[in-house]
Image 1 (tube, rainbow, N blue to C red):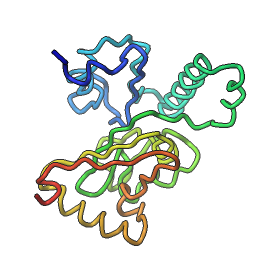
Image 2: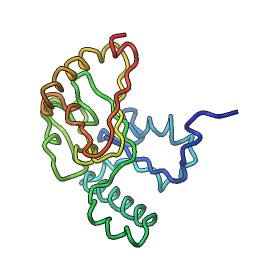
Image 3: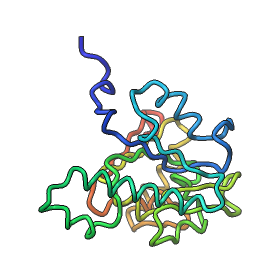
Length: 206
């Protein structure tokens, strides 16, 4: 009997990062990592060194997480690269995540990139703290466009009829180009990867 597809994923070789997190302890009910742990990682054969929650309670959590991501990426890539390809590591400074799963809020935010928030303008840092009038409290830590758009495969998952009006607005906007400040999801545009949208019938207007 063939089991669920997740059983075929090479979990022993997989690192799990988190796209964004609320600045609350991991035990808090609003912690994304608490949810991920309960529904996923507690049931997978993964070692603690493969799991990477955001250290949101540190004074400079964004820098700490970016340094961890860069370190793991470089060491993992170097371990699998031949001598001929080792020199290429320095030419690809932005880590390329293999798969990124995103959602979209009713305000067209994605990750913790909210409309008219400071992190939208980040062009260099891979991880940024984000807060502001349109950021749903508490303050957030989030992956930025440079990291997200460098991924090999990005998927946006939208379910429910409440998503239909926003999807309609986003679709209309993309005909003329992105509007990052007002609809951050339109800034998701892989530089050398794939983007797919997954909608249920309700979100797609049946």
